Length: 282
Ligand code: AMP
Ligand code: MN
Ligand code: MN
Ligand code: MN
Image (cartoon, rainbow, N blue to C red):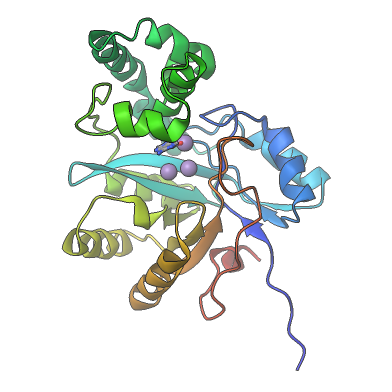
């Protein structure tokens, strides 16, 4: 029996428009060189790179799905919802994302004030230099500044010591709601996907509630193979996909050649029995 090889899809990464370091064009080329056939740029809460990403992808012969990764608050935790195959010109989506970005500048100033209390000066200016725009400052930009200043030797160390709950430099933040994120994505004709479910500090009951509510709202996918999961977690979330009838997604969550553990497209394929989310767009 002949079997067709699975498509190489990478449906999660970040450009310089949010907290990645490569341009949409550089990412498209890198994805293509690594064998990616279906690609999506999913910047945090912003659609500014979509037109460039689509053009670059299509010039290289890749199928492009317009994407975004929306920050939401769920049970006092930050959760990320990826939207795929959406109309990136949708006005409601664009306005919702603008409102979501709105709080980042103030949060960054509060983070810097806390870091100053532990002796780290000028981190707002430092992070802004990396971000380029206060609306898009992320913890990633603070982490790059602390590494540049040799306060920490790598990004992981910055997050462990400074940027997570309970550490100086962490400021809790209210993002969009789950209902809003899913309705913006659905309203723009896209599929909503729970990003890297293995990363959340939620217990089993809370995760079950997240899956059930997400499904009720019209959410259809879950990331199974991602740069944030271990091989054991691929199995765990494959089972969740089956149990809830979610389609499965695959994405590196690539940000930068030196920072990211997994490069664009260079991940294991999805377990065969799962329905790939990109199959709805073919
Ligand atoms: P924010 O949206 O400002 O809360 O920043 C979240 C971003 O921080 C994520 O999208 C990741 O890019 C980055 N991040 C979170 N944890 C880590 C980590 N341990 N190491 C490197 N980057 C991280
Ligand atoms: Mn990021
Ligand atoms: Mn994420
Ligand atoms: Mn991401």
